[in-house]
Amino acid sequence: MQTTYELRQRSYLLKIARAMTSNLDLAPLLRLTLSAAAEMVQGEVGLIALSQPDDSYRVEAYYGIPHRLLPLFAPLLTDIRRSANLLERALTIPDLALKLHMVSTATGLPLRQVVALPLQVNQDLLGLIYIVRSGGAAFSANDRQVLQDFADQAAIAVRNARLYQAVNDERRRLDTIIQNSADGVMILTPERKIEVINRTLATLTGWTPAAAQGLPCYQVLALENVKGADLCQEMGTPLDLAGRGSVTAEGDLVRPGGSRITVGVTYTPLFDERAALQQIIVNVVDITRFREAEEMKSTFVSVITHELKTPISLIKGYASTLRRADAQWDSTTLRDSLTVIEEEADRLNGLVDNLLDVSHSGRRVAVGIGRR
Figure (cartoon, helix red, strand yellow):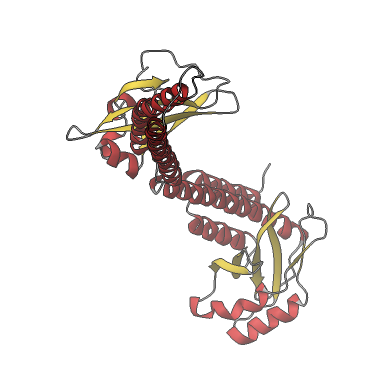
């Protein structure tokens, strides 16, 4: 049968475990763990210190210590060394007894016996727990085992809290990137309903992010004259993106007020480890200037091509006439003919220069769009 002591320990550990599953706030969990551990081994003072990115340690929970005296416990947080065997749960704190005496003298608290145990998960040393008595016998092996059980619970709580914080930090970082992107971005569910829409796309479409959330994407990204695969307009079509990369489309987006812009849309599916579709990332780029530049260039080339035919025809006609072997031309006719050829050649040169200018201008427009 379990003793009263063992039942108390089990009750404390269950209470801590329930708190861990219902609350991700680390501070109260550490205080609960520390107070329970101290009470189980008749400790009068305790603290939990967590490792920091610069390898220092900071007190995150304390027990039996007036807050104003907490800075005087700093000697216990220096020169902490872990075992060379990363899997071994052991700490080396040189001159621990001397440091405890220094703290006792500085605080005026009767501190005599101390135990320090690591908060460790696998190879990660997350912190340590100190329990101190004012007198009595040294901590036994059983005391240490009991305290290690509580330290393990605290270590799991710290790891979970840090993982949760890391996920939150990454989510905020990605949200910032998405919201400040120069391109329109939205994130869709597998059913192609909108989860997220950024500010750029909200401006392009006229929909606020709050109003767009949860809507089928075809209502927000309503394209006309579509070229390519527009997944939003194919809502009634079964979606099969397995083994496919990005899907692209172009079309005209009707904006509030009736104005139109031409956009390029890229759909990128995201799958989980079981190849099940999780989300679709949609990038929307305003390519109106590029499309207009291409149309202007095409129109100009068509016009200039027609214009080129006139000087070429005149030059060829006069040159063919002048080189006829069966005709004798007087000097006036020759001079007039060569003048026409020269003038048409100059006109031809001007047309070619214009064509080159347009080509350079088109490249500048394309580069400008590419830098947006």
